[in-house]
View (tube, rainbow, N blue to C red):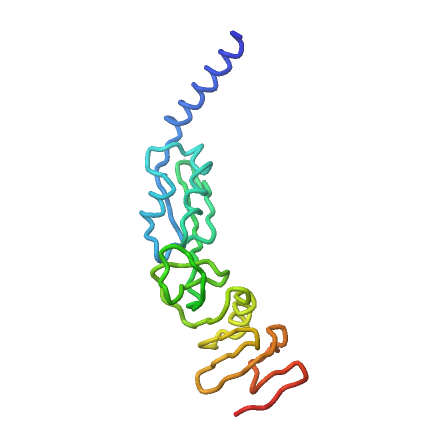
Length: 192
């Protein structure tokens, strides 16, 4: 019992000494576009004078919980320096469909390339249809980044490229280059 108490006392003393002897002198933030560096550091709970040795233990998970953050990496590149590298989610498409995320507009929501909702954002293209085909429509939008609108439903996928349109019976029929006309399971119909 006395030995365990001495070990706990020694560990507690070492913890306090490391906190006092190795404080954070500087917090560096990289990669944030819509989130300012100060907000990311505050979200992580890191500040000058905090514990440098134990900094990355919970800070990364606090930053990763933010809806705008796709990835976060915390490193300690030098004594007293903590670096937070953030990759934010980017608006990919405005999805008109029944997602039902809290805080979204009734007519749809902006999503990133993985389908995560992004509030207060604008998107370069529109996806429209039921949520059951959303993953396939996202794959088509990634394959054809110049498509302005992709409408999908039980009959297939309609791709609007501005001056021309294409229709696919199935998402897996997409070729390497954008279709010129209508693509059916039995072949391609040349369009204007």
